[in-house]
Image 1 (spheres, rainbow, N blue to C red):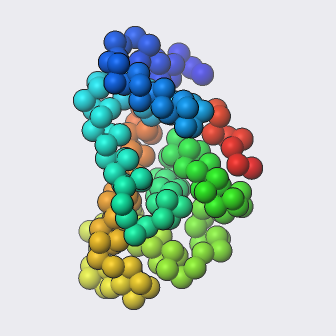
Image 2: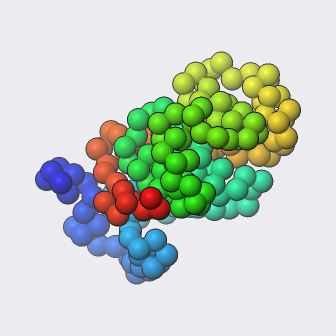
Length: 189
């Protein structure tokens, strides 16, 4: 790892962190086997870290009509369009693990259209693609296409928020050259 990357990702070692953050990092280590580098990068400012983790946890783990796998599929499809190395690696591993299908994770990373998805999930990712590439062109027909596949308005809200969140995080990760934890690469293959 280059020195500049080490600085960005090891900032928590240079910054005093609270007992609350230490406990959160310990929980990550216990549940995930690692502290994701994105959390370490945000540790320079605990208020920003809490804002990031609260939003992430609400979108990706909170109550929703979308399954955890569907949420991770959105993360990967959006990150693929944005070519975000960090998120493709981390969330690609999550898709592989949640689906028990390494091929699905790889197909979503490369091109979601190559994946064997049901029509409902395929339409969800088409919507996310348009929201990522051409958001000003989203119109009622796009939302209606999701409804026609069985998504309700609350689920469409969740789809849009997850896609928007990953568009933001992809840009931050790319801007600061955030690198994924090495542990993600071999997971669930």
